[in-house]
Amino acid sequence: MIAREGALVDHFQRIARGAGWTVIPLPGEALRSWEETVDECVDGYDLDVSEYLNDLSIRDLLERVADDSSVRLLPEYSWFTAELARIDERFKEVLADGPFIRAKERRWWRRSLPTAGRADFVSDVKERYGVELMLVD
Image (cartoon, rainbow, N blue to C red; front, side):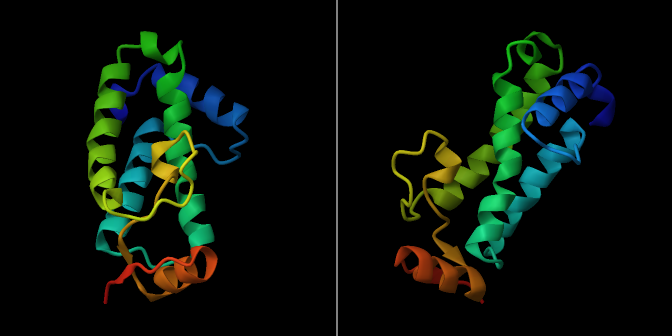
């Protein structure tokens, strides 16, 4: 994956710095990080809501990169957006029946929560939003 990133790295770093990131992953690393977050949600997210929302910040960055007009001109753009779409499809499944917590949020990945989680996440969601999720053991 790294070999296919080429010019994307420079643009990715510029966008990440502009978004306030201090430790900037390579594009492939950022996609893997997003996929790992999705995997955690599929298995039952086990940290609190603050950590969950923080973990979504990588998706925010990926969106900024995908929406950048200079990135859209790069040959790597189709690879990057195809990988992002593949991962997003799995996350959309996780959120499909989850509770809406921010209906007016423009970023779809921040509008709702997974339908299930592990004890700490389920407990924190109940406390913060008054919503009961399914508990995963």
